Image (tube, rainbow, N blue to C red; front, side, top):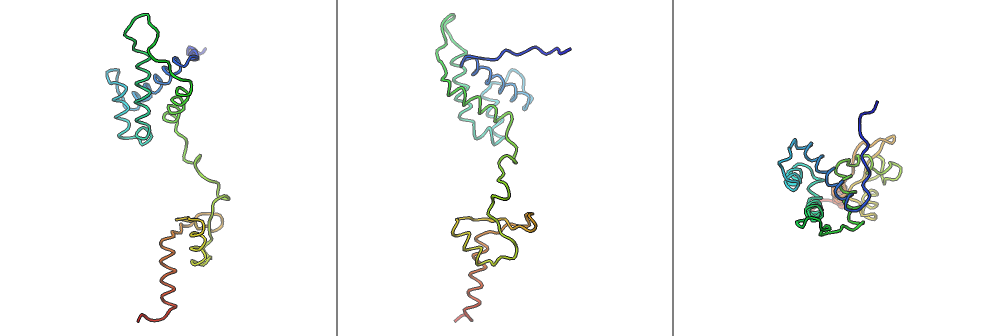
Length: 173
């Protein structure tokens, strides 16, 4: 028998904002092993020091925390909230919270090998430099049997071509 209670789905923008805030707050407390005595903003600051995703989103997270506080902490009992979040803002906050709690795996960022500009190890450096310059690439994977065996670097390849040109031009005067 399942003893877990069904969590009601938040429907209004305010309810969804609070739900996303609470989900993030719980995640941060667990990640940092912090109790209820630590403020949400302090949790953000602490995680931003060790997690680049939180560092990148810190300003937005603090802004959404301020919005949540404006909605949640009304100083006039019985009055409506002093702020009403826009649907687009809540959707963006939910997206940000989802990305922080469930970051995409690195493989989701990868470009399939067949779409990548690559070279094989037998191509002439001069030709590779020319192609890299035309396409404004700084690096190019070197493949053998569809496996990456190295990375060509434009700066290094250009230096090799220049050195070869000097050698072909004869002795220094």
